[in-house]
Length: 83
Image (cartoon, rainbow, N blue to C red; front, side, top):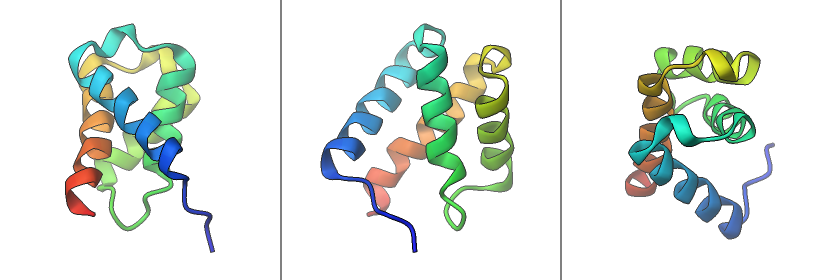
């Protein structure tokens, strides 16, 4: 069983995603990795393409494009409406 993130952690991730949608290339390497880790944990909810981008974000955050960052951020912000 996986631990659910705290409300503060979820809020932080959603704020990061909102910022990433507006200015994706201003996110730091660590922020991109965090987004990738978050989406990678969403086994049943993330699409195959989102999982591939999440893996890339974790292993090569400097090589990820602005559109790929926006895809990860859209997934995170979409969780808010799905729950």
